[in-house]
Length: 274
Ligand SMILES: [Zn+2]
Image 1 (cartoon, rainbow, N blue to C red):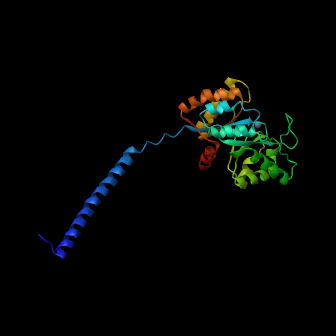
Image 2: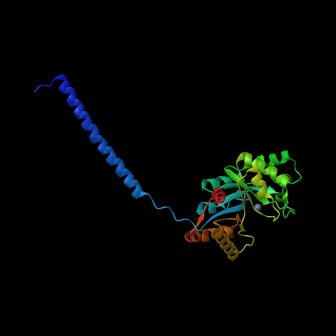
Image 3: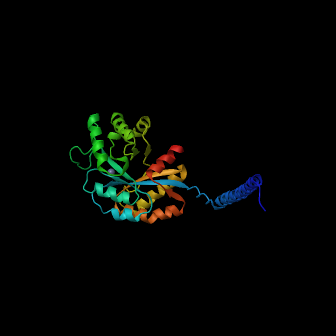
């Protein structure tokens, strides 16, 4: 049977429409099943932690012994490194390789020095703005992967509005956060940081002012208590064996209790939303 030209093109149209309808049904069915699957496969949201905790460990750079601890510890401790020491850069690299936040431990003037430092190592209230900027530049450039700073000493400096304003203007310009170690009850850092638009938190608990395991465990309990009450807490300890041992022993236990260990940056962001 032969078809006329018009019968031939009619037949093509009918076949075309047929294919289109079948294809549409297949696509619609596939989309529906993808949607259904993605609904049934969505993982349950993790339960809200009973508190968020960040921990900074200070005074790194004198040696590289603590690198083994950074390899072992699986909670996100921040490593705050004194600039220009023999192992400052090695420790920054070790911290970064082990996914730990790197901070500059900024030497600031105390009311009373308990140790001696080389000339020009500590930022002093008597320095000019340009001298302060030069120090900050030199220190931050000395620590690779650095994302923020906290103060080493600084009871005098953190009470000095003009000096902290200069320091915070530098931090703001370079997008570094600042944690007030809070070594003076008269610290003006918080209001100056707000004025200069610097991401900021203050230390809540010092973990290891006594070299005693029971004491350190008690301070970790204090930190947990505060995190439970306010939703978050920030602790500061040091590059010391007993502190490292306590974190290795109790970190997991605190996680099992429902506390969430976060980076300092994450804690600042969380606290901003509170
Ligand atoms: Zn320190």
